[in-house]
Length: 366
Ligand SMILES: NC(=O)c1ccc[n+]([C@@H]2O[C@H](COP(=O)([O-])OP(=O)(O)OC[C@H]3O[C@@H](n4cnc5c(N)ncnc54)[C@H](O)[C@@H]3O)[C@@H](O)[C@H]2O)c1
Ligand SMILES: [Zn+2]
Ligand SMILES: [Zn+2]
Image (tube, rainbow, N blue to C red; front, side, top):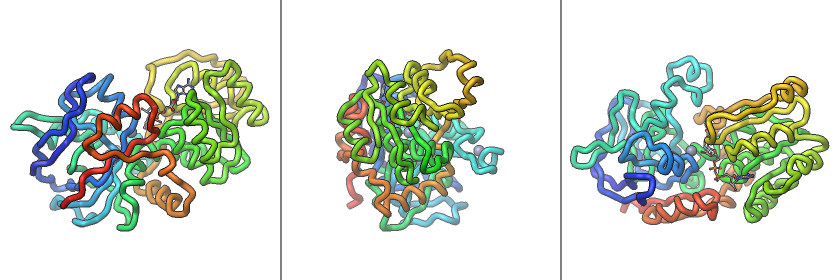
């Protein structure tokens, strides 16, 4: 079928809305008409720094309505409302032990831009266009996704507001809920109050954690963090960030989250922890950094990474929806909607920090 998609053809070239051909679904695939899609920092970095292969359609925080199902799909129906998430194989050791974000095929399924057999469902006049970014390529009117990319939700779920749950939101919220698992009396410091950091803050508050410190360079973002329930906000440019975190947390935070991917910030995050504290890293930044081993051994601190909030989306996205329904996860306060035709403005606003979480709204079907 012919669809419209935003095609990336180069780092400095704006995305162009083009008519493009989408293959028929294979046995285990599903065609979804996209209702909305978030813009994640990973879309920006992939476009500007390391696209796997060009041209490519990016986008991986889609939501929509199922239009077609493959012959082997039995638990998703045409008309189902769905949120889309990252791909996982479903059969490897990680997938079968409840940790699909560490799937052995994660890179191939999510960041290669193609399926595991190197094919792509998209083409223009016979020319291949990469169209399986995070199994989705949701900057498009329709996507062809694997069954495991689909989380079926109730028909009354707000598909626009909740679109970004499948990547940036579950990454931050899951880092708190699934990796830190804080008790309400424990403290968390979040470095970087962007889409991921704010989602971590919302999850911490939803879990009843009262002492949540947010650090960012933007006064506007810190004001939003305060409104969302941060107990203390700190200017990341201050000389004494570590001392300020220690003061706010009674000597050091139980947990720290770094979303900035900046090595000096990661070093400060480690220093700002209490003894036996844990630093969780999620950002895509420099490939390596040095730190003092004695600082870990002498204090019992831990550093660990986390992909997609270490969550199983089939379980965690319904949890996020339940929090949202209960008014405990006001994602609307950090998002701004743009028509699909303004995708380059949305990408630009995310890049310069003018919008925390852009959500593109696709034209309706009729
Ligand atoms: N691991 C995963 O599964 C996963 C998933 C989604 C996103 N990511 C990555 O997470 C990171 C964050 O994504 P995002 O969408 O929240 O990005 P974002 O740009 O919205 O947020 C980053 C924030 O860090 C702040 N910041 C930058 N330098 C700082 C400093 N020195 N001190 C304090 N704050 C500083 C910025 O002002 C911004 O608010 C990105 O690297 C993204 O690629 C990882
Ligand atoms: Zn797997
Ligand atoms: Zn993402």
